[in-house]
Amino acid sequence: MELKIFSGNANLELADEISQYLGIPLGKHLLRRFSDGEIHYQISENVRGADVFIIQPLCFDVNTHLMELCIMIDAFKRSSAKRITATVPYYGYARQDRKDRPRVPISAKLVADLISAAGSQRILTMDLHAPQIQGFFNVPVDHLFAAPIMLEYIEKMGLEDITIVSPDMGGVERARAYAKRLNANLAIVDKRRTAPNVAEIMNIIGDVQGRNTIVVDDILDTAGTMAQTASLLAREGAHRIFACITHPVLSGPSIERLENCPIEKVIVSNSIPLDSVKKKCQKLVVLSVATLLGEAIKRIHEETSVTSLFV
Image (cartoon, rainbow, N blue to C red; front, top):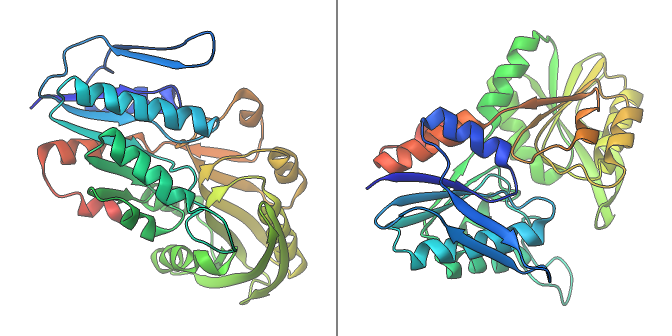
């Protein structure tokens, strides 16, 4: 069956890079709005019997992009595509993955149900906030990690005496994987979150004095936790401070906080597009994950192993 790549409006730049890697032009379609905001979508080429990959991270405006994705999936299902894979580099609503207080939804599960109900037969995603979100889907999920690309860049920096820092207990497994690859020490920040997007840093577990520290996390949103973590590391005597984040949500006062905290560089992927204002932040280093996603798409289409891409 023929491989076809389509993209919603969420991250056209990344979709173009993936298309170039695969040597396949992006599919032709019409995606527009009615005057009342309703989304209208029409495929402009034949997709009957095709293996379709729809590239659409669920980033700002997350609700619009989620609806775009579901409508696109439904269009391909009704146009007799052989297989539809939702390629979601950044899975929005992933932080709402459990009932951590009374009378709240599990929104990550709801979004999984919406994408599946729309007709997606496979999910390709990257650095989920919690790996167990894969279990929210009743279809195959290929969960990639940006770590190989991030680690390659870090190794080229030529740092010595490295300590990898997890900004909370939930990120210890991710930080440990980085530390193992870099033969580095591990430190953990004891963080207590008092409200959504509000965290109170308590203390740090591990030795960072005189060492080059790299804070590793999956999502950088308002940068409140990151700024507090960097300040804590500086107080504890860290020599240099860096951050390595897969998904640069960067909402609210994030850029101002990054500019004013002691972090030297913030290494991020292009899973989420950065607007012109964010690109002006001198501390941001953006690495492309197009090759990683493109290779995964190629292997899924050819039905060969994707395992080597998971590490």
